[in-house]
Each structure stands twice: as structure tokens, then as C-alpha cells.
Length: 35
Image 1 (cartoon, helix red, strand yellow):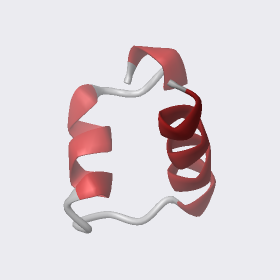
Image 2: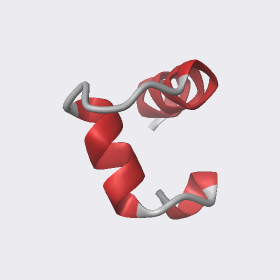
Image 3: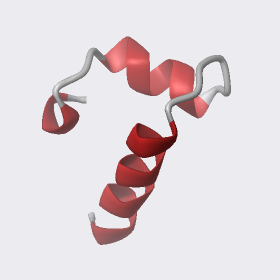
């Protein structure tokens, strides 16, 4: 979350499908693949 400048809750909600942010989701997936 710190890498993206958002609260951890934002990432958690995104992972659980409770909120939608396509650009953040794409960046998060790319980051996970390179980590």
C-alpha cells in the first residue's frame, strides 16, 4: 500500500472485490508479478 500511496484498507478492499479501481488493480498486479 505504501508503494502506491494508498491506505492498506484500499488494497484489502480491492483484493476482496469490495471496491473497484482498474488502474490501481493493474498496477498492483504488475507489482506482484515483479516482486
